[in-house]
Length: 495
Image 1: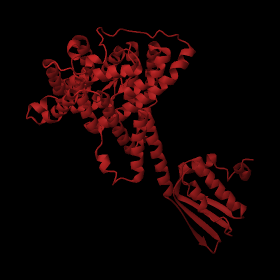
Image 2: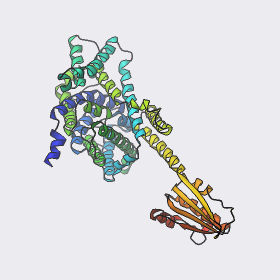
Image 3: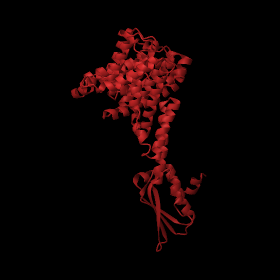
Image 4: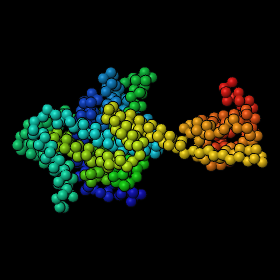
């Protein structure tokens, strides 16, 4: 137990604290921007980011992953805030938390095993593109100073680590932010800053119960939004956990993460914040800056609040160009460049799944739609591929006038038609044996195909015997099959 606590909190103190500072600096403008997207005061996003990061550090299932207010969640809140106001958003946030806790107890985190690697790659690439696109407003219709500052920031980020000793101790994104802020202040450069994004809060968050009627009407208003927030939040969190797992070569507890996200969102709603989830961009910043344990997530939340309340006069001076440089670094580091080279090597179906995931996410700006499209396509391609791995051969015994059909492979909705077409129902034989020793029946479509085959042979006057059914296949055939039941033909034809 003690060793576990040390590993989770004290094994990388310097790296975690420095990474927490970098993440906190990058969280501030994003939290403000996401608040503006949702149509609420910047305080709502900042309080949410502080609360979610701190709570998830203790109850989450993925050490080193950053959770806060996110753009994907903010987009789902726009209509609710516009039509019903902030109080209903807070109520929806609380309900979202409860639904996510329920998902954790139902072990829905395990559903990630149905998400193929091509979908994850498409998700990562789409998110990298969205992160880059989100920086474009800061790079359009601006003076040359912005481009110069951004280019300088990227130079610092990529070149500073090459400096012996110091380059490995201090995270280059932090050096980028501090250096460009100092330069802009010293030379009084007229450039867009964090202070131009919105007013920072000047008080600690307080307990705030949503001022909404506790009745069925309120539930019907917030439920659709809460369900959407739950699905998007868990999808983004589970996908981010997968990516951080790969980056750190460690594992995470998905179901605990579902519960942790729920608890964090309840805490956010009670402190006047909006719902949030894991942030892939900030998580990668954390990992790239040296953050590894729960301490990095906790320090990001704590530093965020301290900076907003104590260092607000300095924070408002940070040039947006410095943060744009950091986020461009994140988008470049997030994109799976190897996937472009793999387009020539991977199967066409894998490439289609990856590309469609990217296109849908970028087109809709909704990660859930892209992931669902990718998963659906991957499932269809898989079913089609497995459906082809079924073979029916036959042999005839003159002495007993028996035709034996040997079925090999998987029989289910995709291969059931091929299964039925493999039999010669017009052949004049007295006996037919269907050997299923090397076959497996998966669903009622497969059972229905077997029923049709048996009944058609019987119509032609043949005696049919089924042999070799394994236990699982026999169970589903016995339960749903009608070929061995009275009036089988009438049942099959729907009479």
